[in-house]
Length: 199
Length: 252
Image (cartoon, rainbow over all chains, first blue to last red; front, side, top):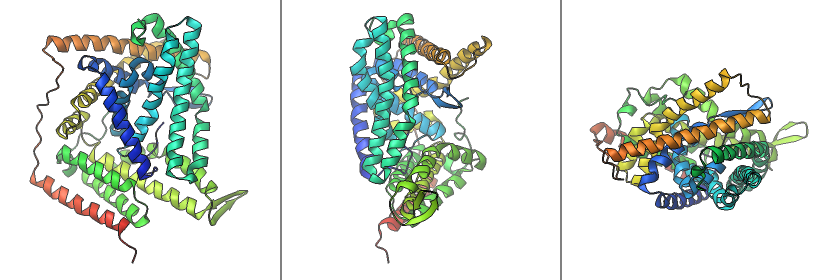
C-alpha cells in the first residue's frame, strides 16, 4: 500500500517524515550490529515476498506481509521497511522521496503494533497461535489502510470518499493476508520456532 | 526478474556526482510536492522531462514505468471528481463531475509524474550500492546505510531462491487459484524463504566475523565534485528558484 507522490499536503508529509525518523531511530537503537546481517537478509526476503502475486478471483494482489515483519523483527521493522521502500522507489519507482516518511509509517506502524498485540498469542497452543496470527495479518493491513486513509483525510476533506474506497478495496486483501500470515506462522512454529522469538 | 533497468548508462546525468543527484532529487521532490499552482506544476514536469532527456534513458521503458506507478492517481481520478463539491463540468447519469475536482486531480497527476520522472532521471540512474555510499557521505546513520547495502546485496540472491521454490511447486503441478490450498502453498513458500534467509544470514555473519568484521562499516569509495557538477548544480539551483517563484510570486 503506497500513497503516490504529489498527493498529500506539506504538513502531512512533514509529520509522516518526523514520525518515521523517530521510529527508525528507535528501531536502529534496538538493532545491534551483530543482528544487521540477519535484518538485512530478512528485509531482502520481505522485499521479494512482497512481489509475489496471489490470485483473488479474476484479479490478483501482491502480498504485504507487514504483520509477519512485525512478529519477526519488532521495532527493527521500522528501518527494515524504510529500506525496502527505498529499494522499491529506486528499482520500480513505487513511491518516492517525499512520501517515504508517510509510507514508512503506513507499513511499519502496524507491524510494531502487531508485534506488541499478538506476540503473546503466538507462543501458545496451536489453535490460539493460529487465531493470533490470522488477527495479526488482518489487523496489520487494516491499520495500514486506516493510516493511509487518515493521511488523505488530513490533506483535505475532499479525499473522504477516496479514503473510504481505499479501505473498502483492501478488505479482501486483509482476509488473504490473515490467512497467509496464519499458515506462515504455523509453518515457522514447526520448522524454526526460534525465528518467532519464542524459542 | 529484478533488475536495475536505468542504473547503467553513459550520459551527463550518469556522470554527475551521486551526492549531488541525491540532494537535487530531494530538493526537487519536496518543492514539487508542495506546489499548488498550474504554471509551477507544468514547469516542474518540464524540468523533469529535461532531466530525463539529459539522462538518455530508453523512452519506452520510462513510459511503461510511469504507467505502472500511476495506479493510485487513476484511482483518485475515478473517485475524486465525482465527489468533490463545486461547479458542475460533466454529467454522466446521476454522477456530476466538478471543475474543482478535475482541477485537483490534474494537479496531482502533474506533480506525481514530475516527481517520479525526476526520481528516475536522478536516482534510478545509479546502482543502489553507489546510492548507499552517497548516503553515507551525506551523513546518514551508519547502521541504516549498512542495512540498505546488505538488503540490496541479497535481494537478487533471495529472488533466485524464490524462483527455485516456485519452479519446484510448478513441477509438482501447483496451479494457483482462489482457494485455501493456494494460499497455504504460498504461505509455506514465503515461510521457507524466511527460514532460508535466516540460515543464510547466520552463515554470512559468521563469514564476516571470520574476516575481522567488528560491527563498523567502512566506505572506501570517494566522490569528486567536478566542474560539470558545479554547472549542473547552478543550473538546477536557478531552475528551482524559478519553480518557487512561479508558485509563490504574487499574481500580476
